[in-house]
Amino acid sequence: MALVAAVLIPESAARLSGQVQAPAPSVDAIRNATLITVSRGTINNGTIVMRDGKIAAIGTNVQIPAGATVVDGTGKFVTPGLIDAHSHIGNDTINEGATAVSSITDMGQVLNPTNIAIQRDLAGGLTTANILHGSAKPIGGGSVTIKLRWGVKKGDDLIFEGSMPGIKFALGENPKRQGGGIIVSPTDADIAAIPEGQRHLYVLQRRVAFTPIIRTPAGDTQAELRIMMVSDGDGYRAVMPLVRMGRGKMMGVDHNKGPRFVGASAALMTPDAATTPPLAAPSEIED
Image (tube, rainbow, N blue to C red; front, side, top):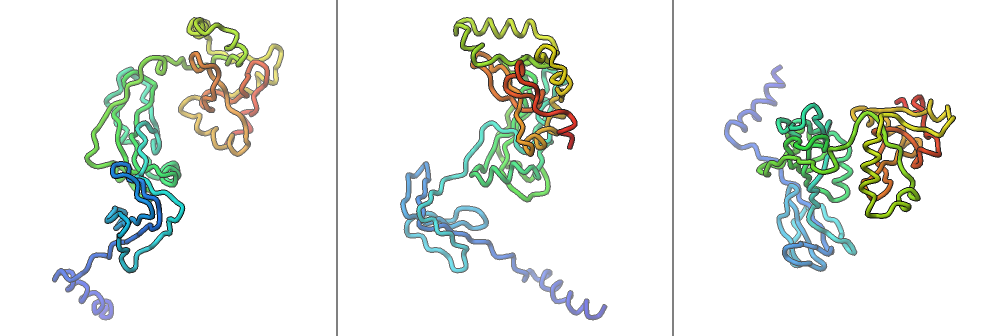
């Protein structure tokens, strides 16, 4: 115990006297790069110096401090971080579907700082994102702006301090989707055969006739048995197993634009569900 005290007392005394020094700031530099400043033009063969992740100096005659970590940017470009004005990354959930007006919800309360998308987007140059509520209802929840900081422990650590709050509105066709089933996708030929001016009517007729049933080729019992329905809340469980298997995803009607990929949150099938059975049985994607 005496030895421990002998070690701790000088440190404690130093703290009381204010003699303990703060850690030295980390200094990084990029040199010989093309710096695209956006607001102040382009700097060729420029140097940029950063202290603790913040830009300290930029130009053609910038001195790099001794001890800095230096990256040679020859042949490369440096730009400001990208901003995503409409994003859902880092969310544990994005929709409150119980009411048409869900403005009481706040996306800042469901941020997940361990979401791998944050690290991947940072690697791609994204530094700021506006995180929005989903489009399940006309008036969604409050949005939150985040700075992509990989390695923080709490969702609050992602929030961009001082940023303006917002709210998600989803009007028009988006929140009018029908749940509980799937409209069988038309083929490209189906869409092409309809005069452009009549495509709205075609989509409307399909919606009116819609029933929560997945149609399969007549007499194809195997296709019927292999279809698996998954809800919006559980669809994420199927995504990674499908990716590992290299399997396809369903197609859906994109208003008047013809078929499009819409992901695996409704059913697992090939692009043309009317002629080809699903690619994955429920047992194949249990994870």
